[in-house]
Length: 440
Image (tube, rainbow, N blue to C red; front, top):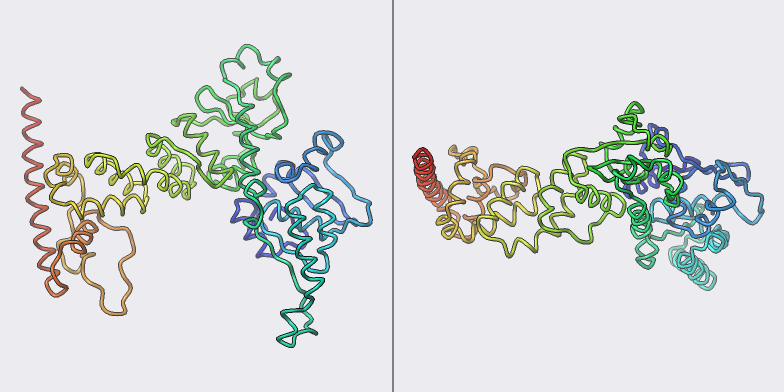
């Protein structure tokens, strides 16, 4: 967690699960340090302005006015407790609130000041419940005198959608995208751009893709992607190309190649919100590649979820294409869907030239019985769960759909292999005919 004082290992892990913070001492906080420190009762709480502004209108207003250029803020209000502010800021990062029951009234006051109204309502509701049902659960167990302090735990899902972390970061992303500018304008109007460039998005990084410059936040990119974490830690790359416009903006500058601006924007959407709302199916292949290149593997699942309904309407030839892509990029959901469709409609696909040509590009199925993935598991044995040879897995799917009883399973598998061999011979002959036709 980016908040060091008293943070538990569980809290740090939860924060990391949301994409923020390390699990050990070698933290991203050391590479991308917090930009604001609060002192309550002489104890520090470090945080990032962008997270605070995204979650709290109070902090957003303060950082635009009184605290605009400040690195430290010291609170002297005796009603503010260190624990309440720490737990609230921890919630901003992790979307999980955990606080001692004894501090809930102080937490409610802090929520009110920070204008976190929906969270305050839930805290007040719990305070009211505790007031009239004190020790309700522990008294039945005879634990009234237990020494362990009781804690209040609340997850972000309890809040309205617009008050949760993904929605807050989506608003930040929208502001950043609105502030993006075409690179061609910067080449001649650098000074004017610098004067007029909005800084209300609190961006601390610019990334150039083609002719578009995206304003981003290092802590978010580094916490979601090991690629960016490593890239940003190399300060030699901070002002790549020594571009004078970006240097004059005072922001680190990276340039990314071999991807479209649309794909990069979709990747940013996922990194900020952990979700993709919409996607053009034609973008899926590029996004699978982006997920692998930028080590953002969960993005593949989000793309697959949006792509899957469209596969119901594609041609068999296109389905073969998606089978190969899903195998290359390890997209299990798409791969399994394609294999199921082909297995249950095998004879139809056998009549399609693209499927026969596909067979020539794949490793042959396992001929040795000891290597087959289609062997039935012994009772009590674990099933085959690893992604293997496409044709082995297709044979397994076909056996599930069409094969005879278990005692004749190997015979059915042999018949399937013979059918594949026949189709491959046909495909080889078709390929030779195409080559001869091309020569003439």
